[in-house]
Length: 153
Image 1 (cartoon, rainbow, N blue to C red):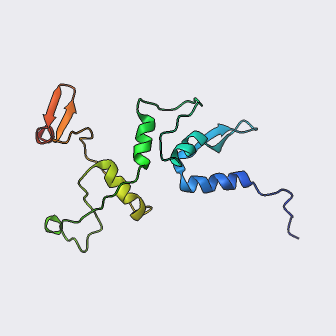
Image 2 (cartoon, rainbow, N blue to C red; image 1 turned 90 degrees about the vertical axis):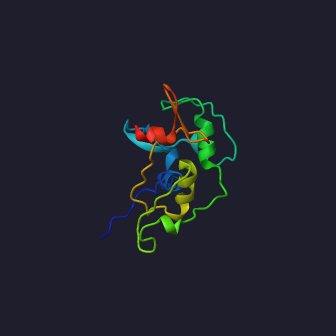
Image 3 (cartoon, one colour; image 1 turned 135 degrees about the vertical axis):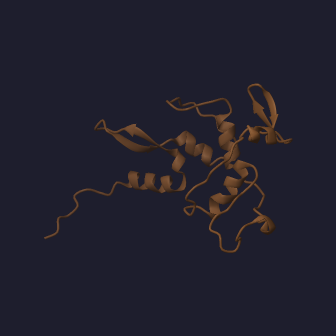
């Protein structure tokens, strides 16, 4: 004889699972009634994910923080109107390769890959320098270097 379930389903955890599937960065941990860590939703982060402007949240918590973090999250979620264009003459075995080399702004390239390659990418290598100017200069502690000079070092 099968045992009957004597409790209702945990709808909260099912909802957290659904939200985690859509917005994995809003899932956090908190201590449950039994004192054990359990998954929870950071509603300030979820509010920011669902907003088209910077959201100020009053709740403080332990986290990695820096000036401009909310603006960076906002920029990461802002849609762009760009596309990837192959350069066949500079490519090797373009029609048969399983690899892509993308040159451009890191954030924009990642945004373009997000939908088309979700769950398909095994590795993304972002080659420094990260902090460059329009002229290709790299911000350095000892002044500014041109990108070619930086790469030679």
